[in-house]
Amino acid sequence: MDSTMPRVKEKYLNEVVPHLKEKLERANPMSLPKVIKVSLNMGLSEAVADSKVIQSASNDLAAISGQLPVVTKARKSIATYKIREGMPLGVKVTLRGDQMYEFIDRLVTVALPRIRDFRGLKLNGFDGKGNYSFGIKEVTIFPEINVDKLDAIRGMDITICTSAKNNDEALTLLKALNFPIII
Image (cartoon, rainbow, N blue to C red; front, top):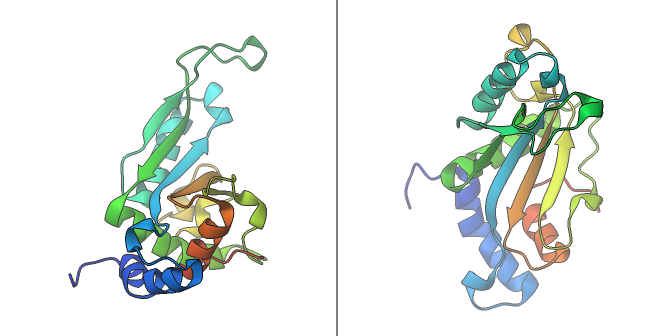
């Protein structure tokens, strides 16, 4: 085994795969569910009034993910909200491979336990196709964020995409990866 392999990836290969084989009663390890990608998204409604918000949020998301975020733009104009087509409204990052496993490790072991009054993630975040989404109200739970240099406290959405065919398989996978999901 490669010594630079992320802890969560090593755990998946050595512990989770045998556990899933037994629990889901499958012989072929290629048919077992696995995490495909993790998407991080920050919607910034305040960017309509101040364009510097995008750069600040982009820097925060880059620090959290270790990857340069993509700026998302409005698809069409909405006069009520003073939004014009092509106006920057958010930032997003898609993590795959080793960066994804490193992020999952930091999320589960460091960030989620730092949430005030945290009791676990809700079960209703599954979409029916094996993907799990949840929101975080403050990005300050990540140790990479310097609270003194923040201009505003923002939240973000996290989506974990798996190859699971249904919610039960995805739940089994995420529980095996130590996600604190309340059943």
